[in-house]
Length: 124
Image (cartoon, rainbow, N blue to C red; front, side):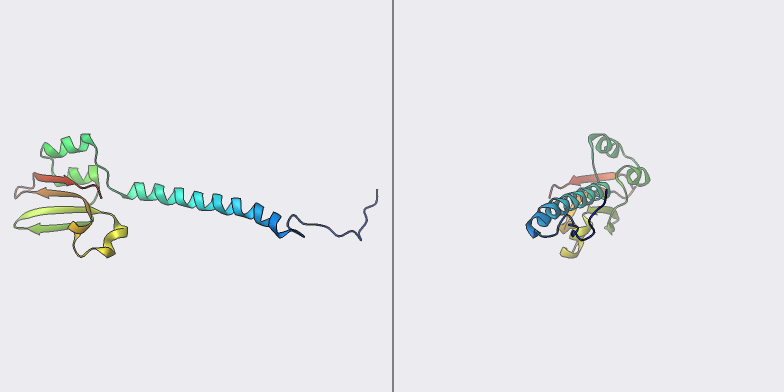
């Protein structure tokens, strides 16, 4: 069998640009979907989560070190009138706020003996 070298070879996109677009668009949409999924997974991993068990342990007078092990490190800390306040917020919104309380998702306040005084979870 002899192949004719004079016949032009056709690639998958030669001749018809709409057929090429029909193949590229689904691939690009799939890539965007995968990137969105990865971003969402990373966002969920970096946001502090509070569940009923951790709230019950917090209310039983745990130390700040144990609270940090459960909830994670706070984004900001303040000491006001001898009370320590931990602020948890979304880092992406940090440039929009003048104070941590403007964007806080969770605040934990400790009294003078470093025991839990107040826990507030705000849905934003």
